[in-house]
Amino acid sequence: MLRAMLLIALLLAAAPEPVPLSQKAQLKDLCAALNVQLAAGDLDPAQAVSARREALARREEAAARWYEIEIPSKGFTLGRYREKDHLLELDGSRPLRAIDGMLSLDIEGTDDVAFEATSEQVTAWNAEKKAGTLRLVVVFQPSGDRCAGSPAAESWRIAGKARAWRLQGETVVVAASDGEGEPVGGGPRKLQVEKVSLESELNAPDDEGRSRLGPARAQLDKCAANAQHGGSLVLGFDLRAGRIADPQVLIDSLHDERTAACVAKAVQGVAMSGSGHGTASIDLQ
Image (cartoon, rainbow, N blue to C red; front, top):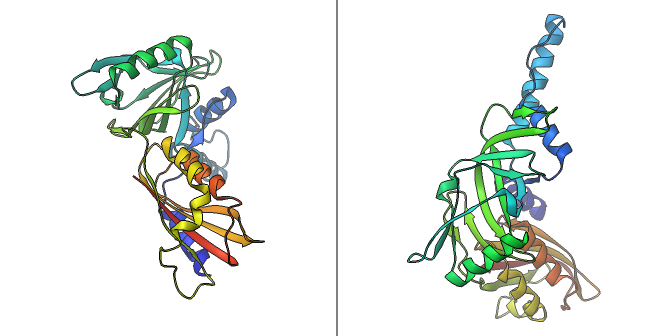
């Protein structure tokens, strides 16, 4: 019961996971929802009220969600490099273009976005961009009342506000910024196992159970290396036949689904004495 209450509370408090937006059909559905008409036509008064409520609810639901979209190399422009500050800016003078050029994104504060970078990294990222392997990933929420454009022309334009930005290389995230455009990261993060405990235990081990995840240390460090933000994770798991099974993320203040999934996968199958349900608290700094 306690576990269920904790999970519900944490889910309510956590930021919602973004909806991936990558297909033309998804874009058409989103614009249809944002542009839904509230007029009821020839419906009788009772039906008209119901129709307007349903249309408004659909619009509000679509506008309230966060979406994650990948901008290909040709869809964004890197701006000036401030060598003294080791910051690479985005060029916000033109809209971001995605989904085969069908969507133009006007994101608030694009001109203010910067990523931590050395001059060597800037050179490497420009080479990746030229090769088409550097992408810009944006988590955003629509901020306008409508989605401008035309289904017939297969061209749409959406205004929005960002929650996160990241530059994605061919295999890993190379830099990230928060919703205000402030850089986050600055090198591989340090992962610290704070506590590993079992419900069946009466007393905590001397080291709070931290050594129990020692066999997964190498893989956990790899998860930390690609983490976008610092924060904490709490995993719930079951012990079956002396091994961790079904690890589930109960707390994710990182708001980083990839890292959370990586950590859960890393601890799956780790040998541990005891039985029953357990939790593991992990910090990334």
